[in-house]
Length: 70
Image (cartoon, rainbow, N blue to C red; front, top):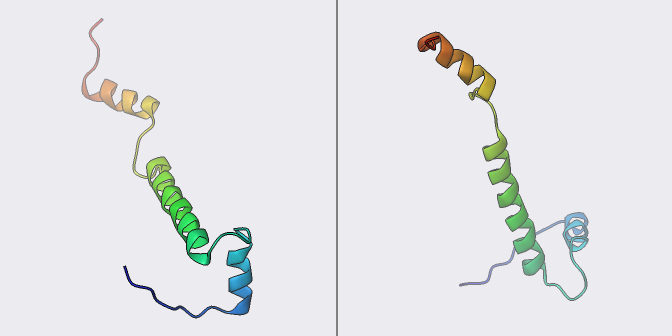
């Protein structure tokens, strides 16, 4: 794994540093932030209800297609 240098404004550097403590490197802080961002993206994906039916809506659709015998 190589090492690279990125340019940040002093303002952003201070904001990133605020997520850690003096013993943590910027790499460690950024890895943690990245991990949290990935988890948030997965959560948002799993919780997205666009295009899905509620259980009640699905039951109504089923009852229309396959009415229950009484």
